[in-house]
Structure formats: structure tokens, C-alpha cells
Image (cartoon, rainbow, N blue to C red; front, side):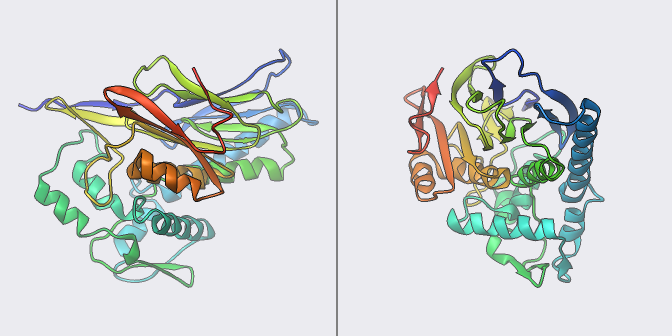
Length: 336
């Protein structure tokens, strides 16, 4: 008999801390959204605490609304509507979905398919979105793969059309980043100048005088739950991590995680953790998945070719964890 164990990480994968002054006391609120804890911290502003709290609440409303649109596990979301109708007819897209889908295709093209939002049929075969994931039959994986391919997504005149029957998209590898970006934009347009949003380890920050040179990003150790692997300093920017320890199950003593290689239909096995740093979180989110699938050597080369991102890749070699750091971070990254 096969026994399955599900581990859904509810702890943060990356930590941001500010140090050096006891006066750095932000206004902080936390809510459970997008299947994770979302924490918004706002530092010293020239408005009242009540006004800051109202702006944070408005950002949370923005997150909840966008998640309701882009979560394909919600039967009433617009992404579900697209999945049910885009083969039959071209479906109109809002500005956010145009941005999400065109960026997704761009990352797919750059990574030669290592990132692919049409992977949804394969994820369904593994039941990663359900209560009890399982190892599918090889025939089921082949069948699911036959219904994927980012090049069969047609975006024209702000509409999407599926060119294969039974295609589906899953925005899990990019939507959270976009939603956090939008929430931060909501804060900025209302005058907030120093803030951090941490959505289960995906982080977006803006820096003001109070936190300048005081904020460090800590990467969780991927094999030792209570330990940290390393850190680097970051003022303004975004950080996303993809790891094989975020969502996984064990079947017949074999560990299977949710980051699936779009070419094989099986969990990618070359990396343990990939952290990407970028200006916006949507880009960092997608590239973290792509690099994880590519592996440490191809992944580092991929990062170095793209001036808009930097990264840290942790992987196993000779039963030990080793890492690679891109040139833009190598002088900043400190191993714990």
C-alpha cells in the first residue's frame, strides 16, 4: 500500500529584517490571502497611524480582489472562465491578464519552455491542487503533456485563444508576484514611501531614509526547517524563491514536489531552491520557476544573460548542499 504525506509550508521562505535602530517600528498588518500569510509593513510616514492602516486595508482589498480573478482553483475566477471557454472562442482580457499572459509567454520564450503556464493539465494529473496528490501513470502524464504548449496560446487584440483542445492555464508561478506588485502600487500612489509586502516569502520593498541600508533578506535553509542559509542586503526591489520544500508529498519513500518540468511532466530535480531578485515581483516569480527547472548550470547562465535579474541557486552535489550566485549578488551574499 502506498502511504502519502502532504506538507504545505505555512512558514516564510524568506525573511526581511531591519536592524540598527530601535525606532524602526513599522505599522504591520497580516492576513491570510492567496493561500499564504501576507504581511504588509509601512515605516515612518507623515500621516497618522489611522490613515496608514486604512491604506494597508485598501491594499489587502486589492490583493483579495485580484486573487479572486486569477486563481484557477476558484471555480468562479476569470482564469477558470478562460480555461472553460478559450478553445471555443477568443476570450477578452483585462489589463492585468494581458500583462500576465504576455509576460508569461515572454519568459517561456526566453527560457525555452522551462516556464509554461499551460502546464495546468499536468498539475491536474498529479492533483497538486487537491487534497491528496498522487503519482500519475506515465500514460496520464503523456496525455496531459499533449495538451500543453505556450506556443498554442494566442494573444490578439487583448483576447486569448487556445489553439489546442482541453488546454488550461495555471498562473500559480506568476500571479502572486503580479498581485503583490499591484498592492505595492496602491500604497505608492497614496503617498507611502517606505514599505514591505511579504506574501509567504515573496517580497516587494520600497525604501525610505529610515530603512536605507538596514534591510536584509534571509533565505531559509531548504533542508533544515529552523535554520537560515544566507542573506543579502536589499533596499528597494523584489525577491521570489522557488523550492522543492514548499509543497511536496512522499510516496513509496520518494519525494515529489510541485515544480514540474514542462518537458517531462515530472518534478524538476536539478535544484533545491532558487531565489531571484528583480525590480518587480511578477518577473522574479516567473524567473524563479524557470531557473529551478533549468538547473544550476543552465540556470546561472540564463540569469547572467538577463540584466534585469540576479539569483542564488542552491542544489545538491555529493549529498551536500552547494550554491551558485550570479555576478550582481556575489559580493552581497553572505552564507549563514
